[in-house]
Image (cartoon, rainbow, N blue to C red; front, side, top):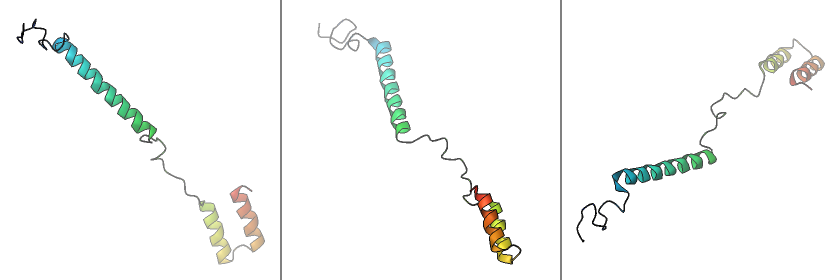
Length: 90
């Protein structure tokens, strides 16, 4: 009655589940913890596909060339301002 055999009733077979049931319960618990951890990681910004994308330069190469031409005196102020407006889309 107080032994540790399979029919003893005193934690003899892990509360009636046996090794298979205990392993499945443990695996389910670990899986649940992993799922919760992944959800928390995603919510806190762990995965952002745009994070590693290259950010385009805020200045255009055309605007740089235009400023160089204006600085060298190749174009006057009015032409510079008109072309700058065209480049900026305004």
